[in-house]
Image: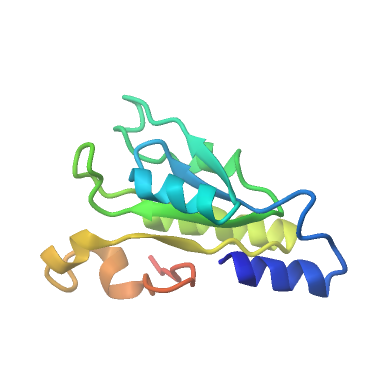
Length: 141
């Protein structure tokens, strides 16, 4: 994700150092994701999780942390806090709108360990979205 961001910045004639890249995730994300950010010199933007958000990433709040230097957003399907799935489709829809308005593409990446435990087709996003790799899911309702 960082290299793709760097390539886009260089192609646009912009600095890859000031301001640097950032990644957005819920405060419920695994500590390993915060370590990734530190080791690869990416600003970690932690979105607070609350009772109202069911202790998971709130996509609308997450969008407040997104800018042209966001290399990606982590979503978690099977939070270690509660086991909840984060709202992938809602996050994807908001990012589609952001890209439409700004021209900035922000991919979704994350922890999908729960997929191995869910039967295929049991969730809308499972059967209709591309979840793996660095692409943002493309969902239809």
